[in-house]
Amino acid sequence: MRIGFLFNHDQIHQVAHSLPTALALARSGVDAEIIAATTNDRISAEVVRLGGGLVGDRIELVKLGLRRRTSRFAEATFDNLLPATKLLIYRDNLEFFRSLDVLVVTETTSLILKTQFGLTRPQIICIPHGAGDRAIGFQKLKGRFDHMLVAGPKIRDRMVSDGGVDPETISIVGYPKFDLADGDDDNAPVFDRNRPVVLYNPHVSPHLSSWYPMGQQVLDWFAGQEKYQLIFAPHVMMFERRFVLSIDKLRFTRPGKIQERHRQARHIHVDLGSRASTTMAYTQRADIYLGDVSSQVYEFLLNPRPCVFLNPRRFDWRDDPNFAHWGTGPVIETAAELGPALDRAIKEHAVVHRPVQRELFDYTFSLTEEPSSVRAARAIAALAGLASPPAPLREARRLVLNG
Image (tube, rainbow, N blue to C red; front, top):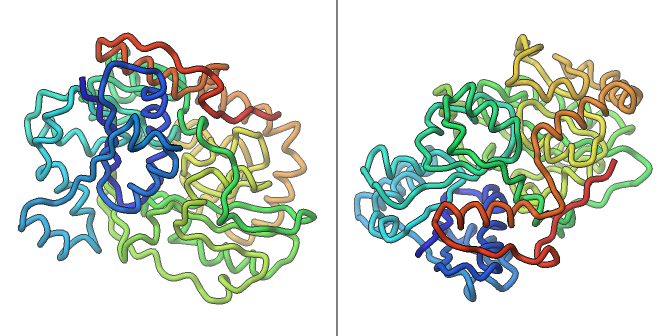
């Protein structure tokens, strides 16, 4: 039995969503080969770092690359604009994928193994990278997975109602990323503890993100005041290429550049894609969350705190499940409203928004005393027809809910 975990992206942000499950499988002594397949050196290094000695010992690390001359040409020609390598990896490594009995992935791209290349094995199991509300997370395409391991009832319910996914192919296992996060990172900034820290975390999607229509104004506002400190940590793919491409609505746009006055401001920390953006270091350090449609707000709500949401496109968001998280704090449309909105979010948090945050968090995540990665590992073993004893709780770290 060969169980593979695929990490095929430009950035490292999806690694922590599924790697904890590979580690739990390895610790459990399951009768199977566990393989972590990576597609660039940056991801390989992160898998080894988070693996804590298991990668290379109980987990085999396989590095996938482009094998055909035409693929390497496409990479050199187009990869700065489009995710050419990410797509070509599948075609160039079909024999590897055929050698697996189970493939665990974090995104729908891997379904081209079925839809385009006609593979009937391995069975493909998805652990989604995030637990947000955007419609793209509940596409009908998700029904093509052999099974999905989701964070909680919200994801299951919307997969069934919006995506038409068979509920028998969905298991609730919690959120394995919480098992790895420790909230500490060498790259995280040191701030004055006497002033609130705001995390501005815009999403990358061109048609939904607040960054493109008003991001520079947001940074200007923070640069011109001293009451709040700011961590500007957008989605790690925002500045990865010269252009940003969205797939749910085909759009191209430029992310622009960060002005030097924003980089040099003593109370602003700019991070366009370091490891700290993926480890929950910022979502745990910040006192206030400022964003739009990123699923990271739910990681922030592990410990309920004030939130503010930016709606420069004036979406009719009320009663829309794609914006459910906007009910956890004030929603504003212009940067001029930031000061009053931040003050109001702090003042009203305990009575108005905290109860909503707790309710929505509990609907989004099913967390138990047993680590989510162990639950996910046991589900994969069962789907593969294997017997797998659960790993001891002490061998898997997980965050403790506060508040």
